[in-house]
Amino acid sequence: MKLGRYSKEPWQDTGLLLRGAKFSASERTWILDELESRILEGNLPIEESQRWIEDLCDRAAKGEPLQYLLGRWGFRALELIVDPRVLIPRPETELIVDVIGEILSKNSVQRSSTEDEVIVVEVGVGSGAIALSVASEFDFVKVYGTEVSSEALEVAAANLRKISRDLDESLLNHVEFLLGSFFDPLPTFLRDRVGVVVSNPPYLSEELYRCAPETVRNYEPKIALTPGQSGLEAIEVIVRESTRWLVPGGALVVEISPEQEQATRSLFDKWGFLEVDVLLDLAGRQRFVKGVRHGVRFHPNC
Image (cartoon, rainbow, N blue to C red; front, side, top):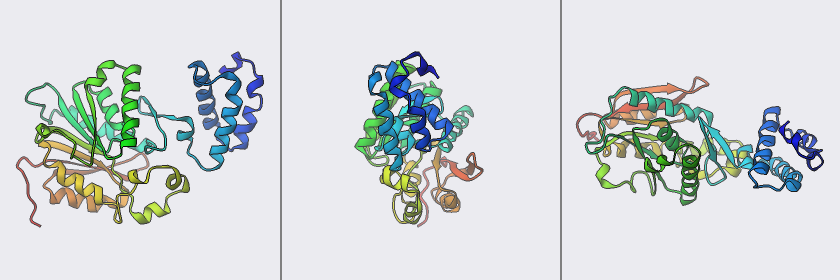
């Protein structure tokens, strides 16, 4: 273990503590890596390392997720700050960036008439995982992200600064986070100019939320998990309102719960989206719905 370069006395019981807390072998490795990083970065005095481990084990015993215990977590190629102000980034959500990449690679998305870039809007940025991944992996995009929670937006902004320092300062020019509900904070000049709208919205019904693990209900922000009774409330707003912002031929991609496939398809159809498709996650479950905006403004008969 790399920590062996230091005196072993401060953490001679660390392994026993972590095993006693029932962390898996991989989790113990992540924790020890985090401990070493904090010491090397000067954020944790070496003489306090044992106390840090003990506090971490106590918090874990109460059910706090490991991602919050560590304070940062990986998403695709990025290392993100995460805490209880934001939803923990899930591995299945990483695939939504691949879906966006496929859309962008087909050259079917119109670029801005004034700038050589594709406008991407993420509704509900949370930690900024999706928006920052898109901006860092595709250099011809400008990403606008909206977020109704001011606390979550603080985390997203901190991650933007962090990723810019880690990867490329120019990223600051390609990402803009805005406080507000759904599309409300977007500048009006973006109407009919957005190439891709993407969202991992709250989609658990109240019933599913009540059945979620205690670690989810007790620690992750409810506002990011459930929008209301049916779980479709946020998805319905995003599908409807995105038609006001997408260019003709622009694409909408939303993450869903598998049992919402048919209902979400119906919403895409109702609001005139074409080429509607449902994509699977790593476990083979229906996880993403994508569609292309009709070339003419579409008003459903309702």
